[in-house]
Image 1 (cartoon, rainbow, N blue to C red):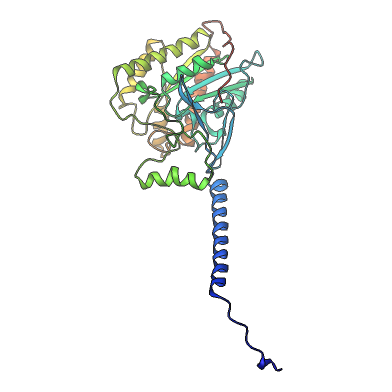
Image 2 (cartoon, rainbow, N blue to C red):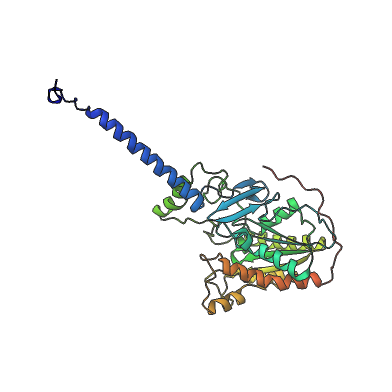
Length: 350
């Protein structure tokens, strides 16, 4: 039989070819999805946000013992919910200097700042170099905290044998009080669990709000939506007085620093600025003003803000440079009261 006599192979069924191409397409889509997820997680830095937890006294705080990598930045929270390295409750050496800096997202730095570049980390390095002593600088902060939240933290955790307490406030803090409405795990800026997919977090937290014409911020900052009540102003000023008294009773020096929003100036501050300043003067403290060095830098063309209130890396360095001489002067000044131990500390709730 010749080759010409062989009958031709029957054509392959169309369904078989369609099934094969469908599998190929699904495989390519799966590869694309995996590549996109890896890109979002390891290049964009999504999928590993720092987590928060509800707290019955201070409204919320960061979960303790976290090590995160986000947008290429290292973010660490120690056992006491501070954005700081780990350190023991009490001083390990008699000559150790301890500075506790308390505030909101201004001092925290947010996810867009690496741990090494937030003001407290800069201060810890510079103080150790200048005074040639062991130095611990604690960063006690969370987005949208006001004086009542900060006082609640100090009451719960103590002062950690602080030699100096630095309180950093913005003008809006004169009436920034907790309302204890559900926010952790409800507002995307206060997540309480890691997202399953980095891609989903990117869509839910950044793309979807823009589609809805909403803000998508990593700073966990809530601007006031109503005029302040006098009771709220009184609560905040009273909390500030109590933080100052608590620190002084322990033997710590107290520094209060005031930060301005981008549209504020020293000649035209927002109303809360003067109220905070008056409260400090009542306690014989002249607040340090970040406004003048910020204005001088901006006059030279430097960009200092990443939005309407939060300083960028350059602004954070100016904050540290402004606080440094004040802290060093406070350390040299004689103490007005004997230092006391903060006592037993409750273990942070997980």
